[in-house]
Image (cartoon, rainbow, N blue to C red; front, side):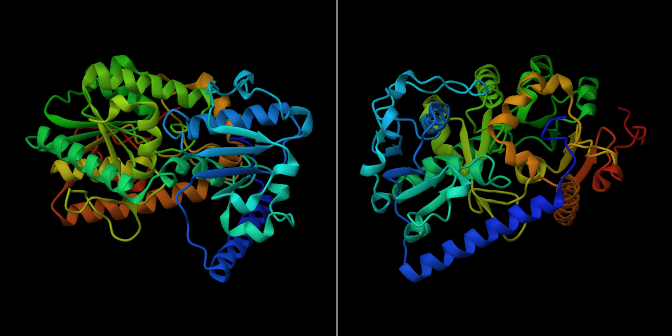
Length: 432
């Protein structure tokens, strides 16, 4: 049984949640007391001292992916190591088996001895061992800490890492990302303004039925690992690919690397745009500058529902790609929105929900579990699903008040979709 499907240990999850709440409270208090102002990241220091070469290789490979030297040479990454490995050439380290190897020249990574470690010089301190978070050496600088221990709690490690590129930008550079994204978004809207219909494709088992329909009369939005299913993409010919998950799409793990490879192939073949969270754009452009005219970084905010335009360029934050990007953008383009492959979750399901095997990298899932264990270990799927169903219900009602119409072409366990099955389709529960 994998870490993703193992029974939830609710007491332990709540303990870890409590520790994280305490840590964030202490850090927040320290920021107030010290009048701390967040700086543009120019020096990253890991803590504590690394004594194991495998741990060092893991940290170096992650750093090389999340802050590549060819794009962020101005950022110095300092890793304190045991005296036995201070002379180690990091370029020859072997990446963990579950990760793509990003270790190359690494001119911005510096190994130092414990004696040469000075946390006061850091713009950000990355604590890679959760057990050392409240060390006496760390406490005076806790306002500048972030936790990147993959076993710490929930999504903390993966979210911290993928934000580093964005935090290394000056304000003007961040503004330019928004402007670039608006230009590309307006281009997407202009090219698809003639459609009254939009089609949204989820990755549930019923996605396999998508070949039964034609989509030439609408704006087509696909998500996530559908890029694996090349035959289906040929049938759909999507105009937009959306994704936002920190471990499946913005990670050094093998699954994420394969997704990005096929993403690039899809863009080249179908001339489609991609949409991802605004804060993740610098990471993608660092590795794939050729995406400049196709990438849309959408700001994610709290507050009200919104169907984004260039004048109101944002979406309301949610934890699912359907409600985060797919439905809002489809609703911004079209009046009738048809949903395929959003099956929802069976009552006895042990994971988030089932996926279409033709559109999922099943053989690479373990690489995600191994690289980001707490992401799965601490997710209570029933709570996540209820929040998703409630959010989707509210978003659809918002759209219907604006005159939009929503239908699902395939059956779903999600209440908001179950009652909106398009006429002519059998309203039956899905089989395994």
